[in-house]
Length: 137
Image (cartoon, rainbow, N blue to C red; front, side, top):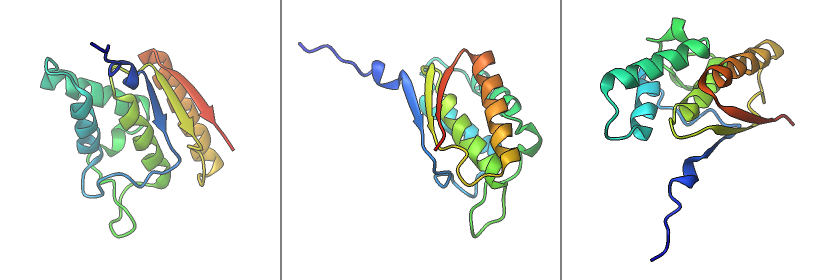
């Protein structure tokens, strides 16, 4: 019988330059909760999921916009810098991941938002025990 390598597939996550793959009608908290539930094991409790979500939102500096919808071009929501942080946070919420590859996460953002994302990512990686590799072109 062939050994399964499914567990290794989730060791490294990739975050691309796009931030348009969010459900625009969901709030920030609902978006993070959905992402965490998708990666949670069967033994993960609702309280653990909520704690993980709140910790991630706080470390990414998004705790003040918890009830704001994400939005898109037709629905006003959060800014593009915050959307990029949501993209990063959704991927990092996978509890099995310890290495994150990020490509062009600052593309199209102001210098202020770019530095904010890097600082928030550094704090998140430090507190969560992650390793991040960021490609800036």
